[in-house]
Length: 391
Image 1 (spheres, rainbow, N blue to C red):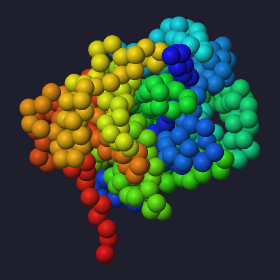
Image 2: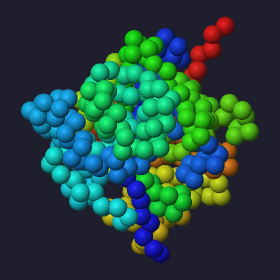
Image 3: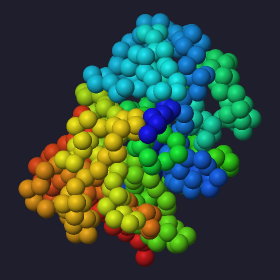
């Protein structure tokens, strides 16, 4: 089997504090729907993002801009502040994914490049720039210019005497598309951007109308509950495992301030590792995405997809189906961290026996048992808060 190459990418999960949020949350997240004609994840609800462009790798031009805006000393300090203890492969010098080579340098290391990509993609896909001069909308002409010619982004910033605000992006998680699932693979760093109420009121995020067709601000449980509707229901939201998993993890934080605090502290203390889910078919129409802290996860995963295809035993399949049907992990079981994916209904939900600390919205929680690198676990489907409707 030939190796399944991938491209490097970045995405921006934008969260705003809002009085329009649904109880028990005081915040909403930006969700955008991909076009049916998209080659990757058609019709899916996603966070804005895309592949690293060669314009993002123009080390000389970007270094010049950041040193002009920040000053050489402050720019060097920023690079050091964002250099976390554990680095995923995408940040490391000489990072390669088969089809492209990243020549990382000390002048402008990859942990800056990927943040730059996320900010540029947010401009192109939502029309909003997160800059050192604040968060603001760009004009449709500026947006189209940057979309058609990404190399113009650095000059656009230079003319306005600003730079992308890289420190506004909190490193959240790194996802590599599983093998043998989709026609394309991406190694994507997910970043979190938090907007307070004043910032959110002064900007409008709007889809581009070609790659992305709708824009919605929703609380996380609203997205997940709508995903659990019948796929024929007009309110159904089509998700893929990374988006479902991350929304489920975010539900640990009822308050915007808690979410922001966790996102700021965790990566600086731990850093991140790359997540490559292992996907298995349990029965016709039912798939399971196994995460790194699950006891079924292999010790030596096939990253390139050119080795023996991952599988589990019949007994392990039977146990996994039992958990799916019971919506509960049996007591005393080894680590479980997975997403169940009903392909016929397009429904997804998580099952885990890991648990977050007291910051969780759930009042009755077992002793905290976090994932690797201090990552907060997801909430099981039976822990999802219900949507309270106004009368």
